[in-house]
Length: 195
Image 1: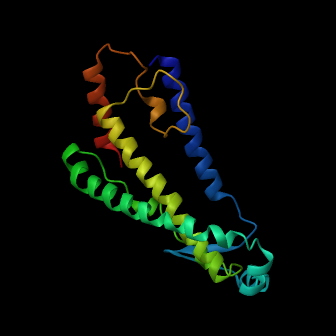
Image 2: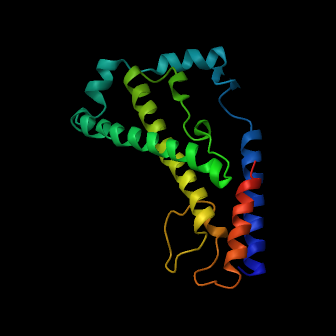
């Protein structure tokens, strides 16, 4: 990877960090505080949320009743998600210590906080729980696989790949063979140093 590309990647990383910090410091128009794993809204916001909640039967009739037909198909996906969760977790718990790779924390990817929104009825909260688990699980798996790829094969593909993980941009260019083993070891050392 040439120096200009490396500089750009470092600038992107710095800007992403700066953006995350700015977003977390940005005042919200909705007033809440995070206390541990709990989100607490101001009393006026809680009351407004409660008034906005749609009654379950009204929700069932008004908001896309045809969605009920696809419900069993959507929720049957929990089976492969749980199986993938079990296998990927077992993989990282057994193999990552051997490779010297820091384990991925599930709690950084799978977050259940939407149940604390009083404007959602119990079905909507159930949907949100399922989606939080599904999308969080995919992100969790993606990070585990990305760390594995960085350890074993940090080489970009010859063709453009859509939806690459954040580590991919720093991988070696396709066909960059000079000092490959030394560079591979550098990638492995970076994994070992991660916080």
